[in-house]
Length: 247
Length: 118
Image (cartoon, rainbow over all chains, first blue to last red; front, top):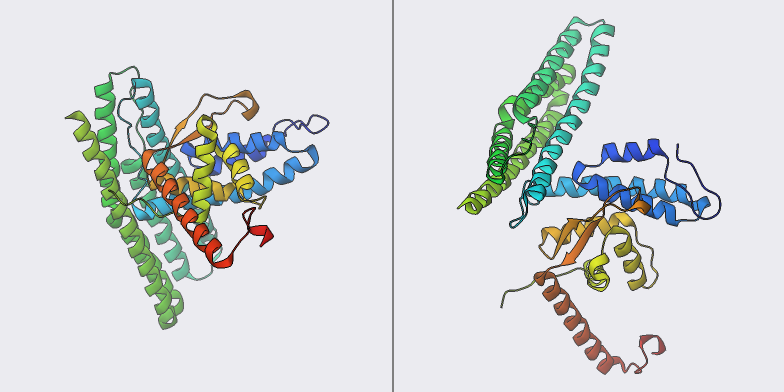
């Protein structure tokens, strides 16, 4: 935990708390936002520093996640832009940031998948109904399949060390293309299996009463697919920019 | 002449803060300046971040990471700069506010020393 100095100048915020905030924030925002929070923490009177830090972290994290989500759905603010006229160090930093953002998304999905799978496994082993056990097993298989596909198609590759600018840009272009294809194909290896299995579970468990919920579920997944396609178009825009840059 | 982005009141405050802070415009300083500009009204840091993100997407400001500093636990700042489109939009907002002010002064007959004395 952070050590406090006496008077009105507290030390660093609690490390555990800062680590939690860092884990929740997208990599591109981590440094500046944590720095801002820490600066505000140090500037506050010692009695108010921690409550202020807690309040600001609790409001800033959802706000940042909201901005990311909004950009994602709108297909704007697509990551992966390389600023022209930059040196190799800056370009490398931008490429690394794009790769880190992808890793963050994958980690987020893996965490969610693990939680759901553990919950389903628990249900599978404790349920007395064989049908429910079967459904849980099928759902776990679906989640593991999507997770495997996620790693295969969407995991970020290591940025080459000490390479020339052109090679770095070519690497980034390949990664952008991978990301675009990942988003374009999302519907058949991730959205469709999860949507179908969720709808089947709803109908099996609730019968006819589950129909409206099943319809809503299909709507939500269709929207997610629309958002992915929109993001893929944005990524294609980045590729076009790079091609123009090359030219 | 290209039509500039229309700005909300909070966006105007954030742009004005960035313009006033020049090279030292980052999350904390922008937040402090916005609170001052809004007449002491409480503003959350989260609201400032959301607005900065929106302004960046609108192409009115640009950002870059600065060198890390000790008072921030060795972390860098994201510094914001007004770009030409942002400056144009802010000037337009100021001109609109001025026109509104002139018009209302004519109707309500407000004293020269400010709205409070009306």
